[in-house]
Amino acid sequence: MPGLFLIGFGIFALVLTNELPAGSSYADDVALFPRIVAVGIVLFGLILLMQDALRYYRSGELDLGDRWVLRPLACLVAGALAFAVLMQPFGFVATAATSAFVGSFAAPFPAFWQRVAVAVVVSALAAIVFIVLLGLNFPLWPAGI
Image (cartoon, rainbow, N blue to C red; front, top):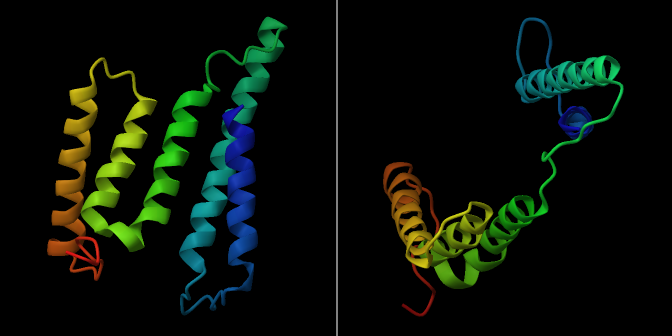
């Protein structure tokens, strides 16, 4: 049930922002917007949970359907972990390409060259946006190059 996941994620975000200063009614502080977003996530999760409960009440059977497919979730998590682990030794371009390639296994692409094309395009666009346009200080290439 995605509603339970969203409720748990929103509560986790609220717990994480608990230590941040909240400010006052006249002046915002750093925790105001993350808390508003976390409360919105919890409310959206509650709405989804109520829709699932109504569906269960009307049909009489619990239908989880095809919502929890393991391969896409595992591929996206592996892509994010690959980005976190490979960034320092291999630079931004190779890391973004590897992360996009691993994450592309979440989708049912029919050919290997399409995965490679996705990795090349995503790494090029990410380098343009994050390094050139935003000016973030990431190493573009591995340290030896």
